[in-house]
Image (tube, rainbow, N blue to C red; front, side):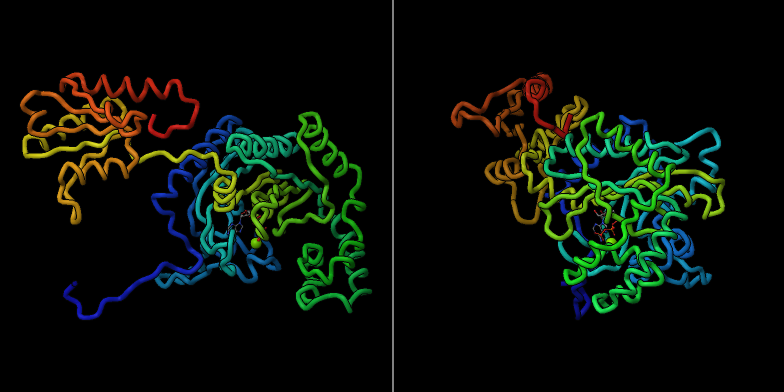
Length: 447
Ligand code: ATP
Ligand code: MG
């Protein structure tokens, strides 16, 4: 007990998750895979702050959006009165940074980011208040080619992660003029169906009628399905761009469906929009959303700079990876060092460093509150941490200058231990572990 009379149990913040060591290997696998796929397309990392000026998001995302209306963690800096917000997404911050550092001065840039986002939503499966996104932003590119490339990059990622049954939905939301004409007709249409509109839809009718198309309210579906379709308002340039994207996708055998109802939540989108969706995650089935946002950089005071990007929800991807199985989660180390006696402990430290020099991962048994440190309890630890081998040093081993090596995952429970001269242990282990891995197709983390 502490000296305080009262102890206080402090819990984590609602909707914000701890990622525990048992889950971390899956996260690492995902992170490494995404990064290597991004790199294989020449994308470069950008890291922007988690906090930005509140005005950036209000201006960038639009004031009549779910995020700005009700999901932002905004606060006043008590030191100086600044209005700040924990980022709910990263596109606005990246656009700000691109302008501030004139990143496109020598041509377009392929950028990617990774990190926590914050939205004050109702926590539920696949929907949290702190969550991670990977995203890519291709800044300064005009043509439909980059839109298609971003989509194909995602496709490759799903393949590399071994994820199946993720489908692509595609749409074009044209430019501002086209949307305004559609919008006017849409309002007239909704006005003629006032009896069907729910309260949220009525509130959006004159501010953001496009969002009404996005409704999940079942009683509005029939009415919404018969509403004027934005695709019918696209003129030749927007249509050509949309066809350009589809042509590349078709040529590369990327299946997709055009969903004329697909609109994206933020104001800055135009032309191409897309979502990757799965039926395996219940209601929160969208794992990645993206599209073109040509107006954004100029809206923030930069030179007109067309751009296209996507963001994917990492928690939803992790859950998909768990469902699809087949991911082999690795042990904590290659070798667990077991020792008994003062001389053996010193020798174990030396051996541990030598094995690590050879590139293997080693856990040295250290005293703990529970386990006293008998050979038996140490071997239990070695087993629990998933080590392939235990290297054992006791009094006999010290006397003979050898180390007992036990193969923890051996099929032969009797003849699985051998005695190796101290100076040959590293070579022996490297041979056993790296040699075995060379014949092993599975993913390993340690090498
Ligand atoms: P939704 O319609 O599910 O609210 P969104 O349109 O708000 O999604 P985006 O802003 O496009 O989502 O973010 C891209 C991706 O980030 C989503 O497709 C989803 O995978 C993930 N995501 C968004 N909000 C959350 C959240 N609160 N918790 C976990 N993941 C999220
Ligand atoms: Mg949302």
